[in-house]
Amino acid sequence: MTDIITRKRVFVAFEIAFNFLFPWLCYRLAKPHIGEIHAIMASAIPPMVWSLVQFARSRKIDAISVMVLGGIALSLAGFALGGSPKLLLMRESLITGLIGLAFIGSALIGKPLMFVLAHASMKRQSAEDSAALAGLADNPLFRRMMTVMTIVWGIGFVAETAARATLVFMLPVGRFLIIGPIVGYGTIALLIGWTFLYGSIMEKRGALGDLT
Image (cartoon, rainbow, N blue to C red; front, top):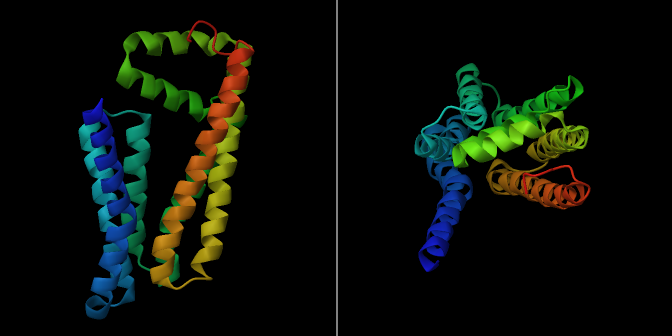
């Protein structure tokens, strides 16, 4: 148990370093030598490396991996096209906004992405659990739960994009590199907290059937 807790703490420490500290350090160290625009590009290298390492660890191509790699591809495309420092800082926010719109769109057409992602996550853990989750697809209460979750997450991502876009034009680049990820992780934390609360309520109403 102690080893598991230690590994989790190390994982969190690495995640914080690659997504908060290292991007800021890259920007600060690179700016005097290569200019602001290229320094911003350099600051994106640590989060990309972290995403690729996480993808390599999973060793599976599924919906979650595709989203991660898609985000990296869009970031690289943004670098190739160039632009002002502020526009470069917006690249991740725009990706999040596009994902949010995809979530909302998938719910509107009756194919909520939350179910797709949950199914992908279950596949990584257990084929039996994955089959049990797929069996809930015909449960109206479960479908409603997945749809509501997908829409809420989509709205959350779009709202995060709007908040980060505002901050990009309000804050100096160095400060945004610290505060921007905090907004992103804070949004995710709020959405996860809401999801657990809503999921518990729907579970009591029978939305999860025999899955629990």
